[in-house]
Image (cartoon, rainbow, N blue to C red; front, side, top):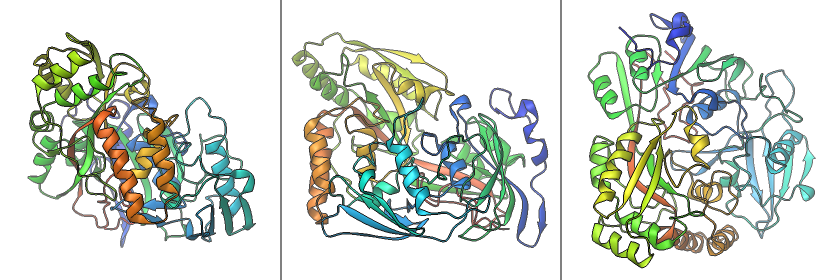
Length: 502
């Protein structure tokens, strides 16, 4: 079959040649080579567990590294490199028992590696921010200590009964003591690093001494490709697994023989992000107007091709601490009234988007048409999908994004606390930050849930995010395999290939 040059980032250089005709089995349940193709992002891709922020980064890091804890499909933490963890009575100290694991060069994994990773994340940022810096900022490194090689005690500056959730956050995978260069990473994960070309391919080989059992895959390739190319590679036998499929691609693959398709609801969370530190969105009434000039039903129907549900500007539908608040109605007249109140009639602003995920550009153009009914002019600027998420963190007045699920406390910490490294709306609210700290210090779960609900209510009223659609996240794989990962994005079982067999 023909794969368009624009669509497949790898085809022109012949990187896929070794995979043509499908993988070869080495006998029994062993697999010589398994190729997974995910949404690429060019030069934005990297292998530093502390700073990487893309879905494809996470898939590669899962192969090479482990965290102390990771979240399951319900967004609750489960132990990985940590065997167990216990708090003291007031939640200010946690003692972790560590697994008997080894780095890829045979060295022991120890408490020193844990403390080094935490100090790295909490230390001065480099050229790229550390993703978990805000999530872990309650840690008091000066009072934390190695009890012994396999036991570490982590002290906190303030109580936190959500600390295990924080330890499962994006950006918390454990790196070896003293590591500063990630060009040839050494991890504790199921696969050992072989090679990496950003925007193209990472290759890794099975680590026979992996603490959770050696993979059946001898060699793993994780490939970068655009939307059209991922299903084409799967159907053409150039890949064994394809992730983050468009609705049209999912429909086509369901009709194809020899391919299994899996869909996870509420897993692709689409949003507009208003920069709350600059005009016009530094005015709360303009933000309220924005929430009412978005026709969510039309966006889901057109941009997501009906493969999703209308969202209500609250993150985390289906997971713990989700606040089921009423959706804002699509009401151009009410939006006009709020803009008059703000002194912002005949408003004009820029929407920065890119083909970084399926439906982005369609959704941007459709919203521009919707906004006209409220007397608002939206100028759509389309950037590069390869660099969009880095650029949009700081650029523009209004941007777009797609998130996988996260534990709601981690969503608050990494994206909404003042100074959070992924604060795409530049949201800063002292009341919100105080409620977050109070929630962490609350041992009683129902009381903690009530505090999180109040935080959701603040965001629902005057926050900087418009969560307009919860899409189904779809992946597909060759039917000849078993143990294909089918977890929701950002969970332990998503894009994890060490349990794949024939």
